[in-house]
Image 1 (cartoon, rainbow, N blue to C red):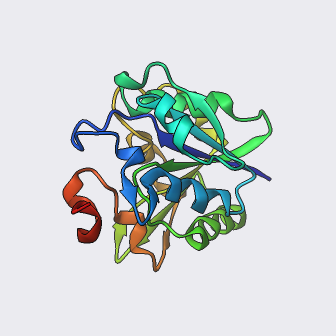
Image 2 (tube, rainbow, N blue to C red):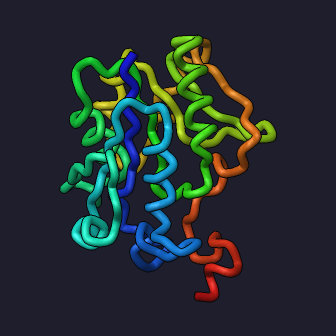
Length: 195
């Protein structure tokens, strides 16, 4: 069963005010934490979608096994990055894990737990929850790919989940990182935001 992880890292970070992807966090760029966590997981293929700051990210990041792809339409919103990632996957991909490039604290074990739950259930989607709150990353089965390719604007997969409520699995995880996205400088740990 082929599962591709798609890391969405093309955004302009307008609320952040600078290249969020390259902001220092615990001694390395914020995005590097995400890439390393996913690279260490059981995902069969890792794709990282770049857009804004692509040249700078290519120069500063260590991609390991992650394959960078460029989303030239990144300014049109998250849906364009999802579509770019789906286009980059192999035809034998059974599911895509959509990983947010601004959630650097998600543990590799959590990524693997989501993959295992998908393999066990073959659900339309597997969504992590922490203390009852839905988080990311999410795994989406290939049966939803056509609808994902039709997404437009600054929306993610949640826009289509309502139609599949009966076949979505929520997996409780002991990982607050699934809720901790970095949208503003104030979201960084205090020690980092003073640098």
